[in-house]
Structures are given as structure tokens and as C-alpha cells.
Image (cartoon, rainbow, N blue to C red; front, side, top):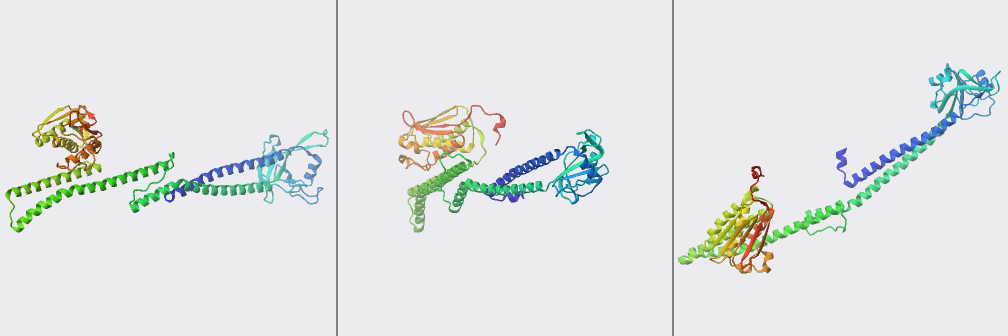
Length: 490
């Protein structure tokens, strides 16, 4: 049952829950109302019965006792009968009915007890039946008479072993209660149906934005169109509005990601075309020489082979950069993030830089600093920064490297970067027009920016005083290694 309920649409579940809640409330109110009205009607009947606790005329009572009948007779002094019941019962349970009584009431043990011990009477009104099975409200009381023979006028005399029983029919009362129950049932039914319809209408209105969101998601899944946006009312901060804004943000981010991927593919194709074209040309020259039997001069052949090797190296470097960048974009890390001594990583990168620029003076002032990062990616980022400094530094110039309080600065004395080009230095495949003749893919600083960002740091590039360029990397960490447990792999 619960599983079936959960399988229903949300609007149907909301309508059912509202209808159930209203049904419970209306049922509680209706039952309470019915019992209150019933109590009031019975209180009125009981008060009428209590009003009959008065002394009866001796002659009337004695006439009933002398001419005792179990059922009223038509040949009496009264023209017609009343709707009420009146009778005298003996302690043995025998009944003498008054002539005006509507019938005879069935005697119970409680009534007999009143007859046996009238002086201890504590009887209360009760429900009962007459001899024909009709429901009545009954009250048994001690039999008291006035104008008893040989007694002073007004003297009240209590009969022993007898009780006076009065009753009223409950037919009209029960009819009233039945009518009330029917009315309450109809009103409750109308209320529940109305509440269910209102709940369904409210649910439909409330979930209309969700329907729009669903249609948008299905449209994206069907067409892969990420340009779709769902309008949100300004200032609306409910859950559906927040969900809609999140969807719009997600599609916008996906669209940007797709655009970046397409741009990456286009740029990669453009960058690969040049070395591949040069490589194909050189290989075709070598192949044609072999096919035609016309040898290439040794010097030219060596130059062609050197060019092929250089182009292959450039292709390998470009492919490696693309792999590193795509791995960073996907949030993947080849190795586990560890606590890395940044000063050691910089020292390793410096050794490679000195080999690539033996004609340069590279100085280093490194203070200990420990960061949380992926070791290989961090070393590649530092190597890329130093490679740029080596590439653009004239022969005999110096490169200054400092590491203080988590701030790594690499300052070269090269030509520098024009101010208008600074906003683009971390873009993928961007290369300064003045550096297009130099080897490189334009991905090095992009990899640096992404690696530093993943390590929780920031990187900046600015013109240095006196010429050249200064690259600054700031990484969170500490000057001392953390406890041994923090060095464990995550």
C-alpha cells in the first residue's frame, strides 16, 4: 500500500494527504458535534423525567393497583393516550400500568431494587425498551402519594415494596440524531471532496514550475541544447525557485564547459596542424629521395632529420600538455594528494632548468614550506614557470627564485610582457605574438593556473621592476611538516 502510494505523482499524493487530513479533522468535529447534541437532547429528556418526581394522588394510584393491568386499556377515563409511559412496579417485578400510559416498560433489576429499598434510591435515567421493543428513556423512583386516608392534607406517604416508573419514547430523538448524522456525513463528504479538489489544484499550481523544469530537462536530454533557460520571478526564494536557478546555473556551466571543450579541440587541431605539416613535408622529402635514387646532401639530410626530431618532440610535448590539462579539467589526479615539501619540488625543478639554460645564472633563496598537493602535478607547474623564464631570458642574464612563507616568486630579466597581453597569459593556447617563433604550445601557464587552483592557491604574473617578468605562486601550508599521521595518503 505504501509502495503504491509512493508511486503516485506528487500532486496526487498531496491531494490525498490534504483530503485525508481534512477527513480526519471533519470526522473528529462531526463526531464531537453529534455527541454534544446527543448529550443535550438526553439532558433535556432527563430533566423532564426528573420533573415528574412528585407525589401522586392516592386515589389515582390506588385505582391502578386495585385494577392492575400489564398493558393500558382503552376503556379508561382518559380520552386517548399520552406519548409518555407511567407504571407502578412491585418488588417482585409485577407491573401495574396507568391508563393514560403509552405502553408498558420492561422492568430491570435496577427498577426492582428501587421498589425494595425506596429509602436508598439512587437511580438515574437509563435507556430501555417497552414491551413492544421500542426504545425509551426510563426513570424509576420511589412511589409517593398525597391525600392518603387518615392523614393530614398534604402529607406525603412513601409506599414500600413499590416504585413509580416513568419513561418517554426516544423515537423522535433518535430520528433527530439520525438526521444530524446524515447531514454531518454529507457535509463531511462534500468537505473532503472539496479539500481533495482544492489540494489537487494547489498542487498543480505549485508544481507547475517543476513541470517546466522537467520539460526543460527532457528537452536537454533529447536535443542536447544547453542554451535553454527557465525564467524565475525576481525576489522569489522558495525551494522551486532555488531549484530552477540551480538548473539554469548547471546548464550555463555545461554550456561553458562544452564551449571550452570545442575551443580546446579547435585550438589543439590548429596547434597540431603546423608540426604535423612540417613533419609530413620533411618525411616526404626523405621518402622521395629514397624512391628517386637522388640522394640528399649530407648536411641537408642531417638538417631534415633534426627538424623531424624537433617536430616529434614538439608533438610529444603538446600531447603531454593536452593530457595534463584534460586531467586537471576532469578533476582527476594521477597520484594521491600528499603533504609535499615545496622547497624540495622547487630544487628539483631548478636542476632541470639549469640543464636547459646553462648560460644563465639561476639563484635561489628557498625557505621550508609544506603544502597539500599532487606531487607530480606540482613539480610540472614549477617546471613550466622556470621553462618560460629560461626561454625568454637573454644569454648571460639571471633568474631569481625565492620561496618565503608559502610565496614562490620567479623573476627573469627578459623582454617582459606588454600590459595589454597580461589578461591572456593563462588562457589555453595563447601565445604572445612576439613569441610565436619560439617552441611551445601555449598550454604551460594554463596548466600552472589549474594546478595551483586545485591546491587551493593562486598565481599571478606582472612586469618586474627594471624589466622582465615576475611570476608569483601563493600556496596554503606551513613552514613545518604536520604530524606523521597527516603525511599518510588520503
